[in-house]
Image (cartoon, rainbow, N blue to C red; front, side):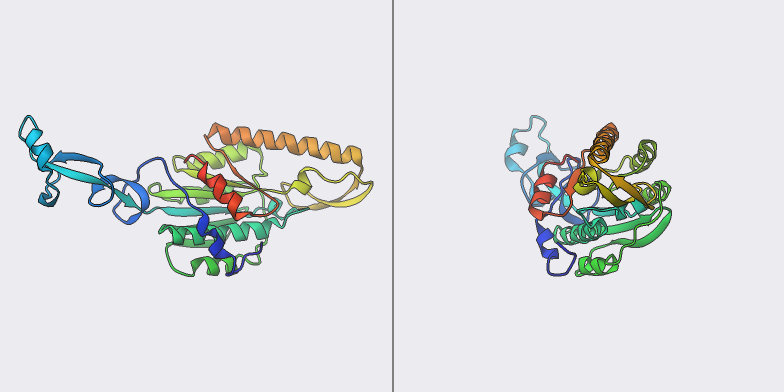
Length: 290
């Protein structure tokens, strides 16, 4: 599935829900800390604390042993900012069965579409190593997803390390924000820990872009152009069944290590293997605890 205006409405299926209540007054689709009017009943409160005579609850006032006037309160709903951190380091350019830069661009534009449909604001920071490729300030405009898809159409992964990502993470506001990290997470464990620590205490939604062709390469005898997962540099390798088995074992070990690092921060990634299935993505998001 390529990033184009025609496919972006498919991402209207996506939704995210935070378990925690959010501060703020801007109307949206997420539970707010404040109580207001409208919606389902929440509780009652003394009139002096919430002086709204339109919400006076006569029955609870009459049964209050202290004779305190009681008003009815209702849960409010607020918006949040979905802030995408796109890790476009060189390893993202490595691919066998997947065009991961294209998948990353499509996912970022799709999340912008879903945020607009869900009445949330959207922002994006795309980093290639320490270079900032693109910054989209928080906003909610029609057509933003299509514009983002066009801006990321020629995404060129480059650079290495997480120093740039850490700097970008610290610039993200701490309130009413959900950080969506799009990455292959092909970094050293200590680098990942530093990056994830920079994101705390913000809620984080990791999208893990996997290429099953790199994880389990074919075992034919021959030559193959291999891209180093950390630097993105190409080299020629002699392939064989033993070589393929070794590559698969190393990839499995890296996946276990990555899941362990994410678990240290209470995170469970949404895994995208080779290409995006919007229905599978929506199902995965419905099970993510934020």
